Image (cartoon, rainbow, N blue to C red):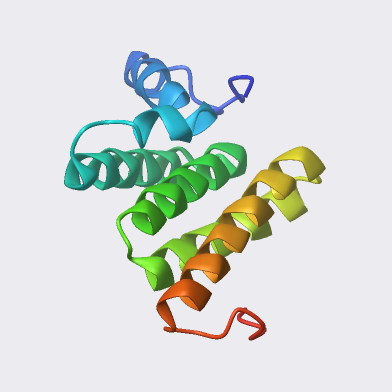
Length: 126
């Protein structure tokens, strides 16, 4: 993901964007960290930072990363909610490739719901 313009050129904003960019451009790498709690914590930090910066592309990436981590942790409802937030942002950004990545994540959640019997895989969940 190309670093989006954040509208702020302060040294703090530049430093923050350098920290956030790897987290939201490749959330799968962040989810490969050893501890599930650490993975989710890193993604929550990234999400909070992107919200402060106000960049919808980075917000979408952070939501997607958090959705991935929470789903891997078995927190399917939370993961689903973050994937939906990511999808909403990617739709507004007209980014079909990243929308497809989010749909893959949503499919994973639905598959795990079906496997665990917690929700119907065919239920139309917003």
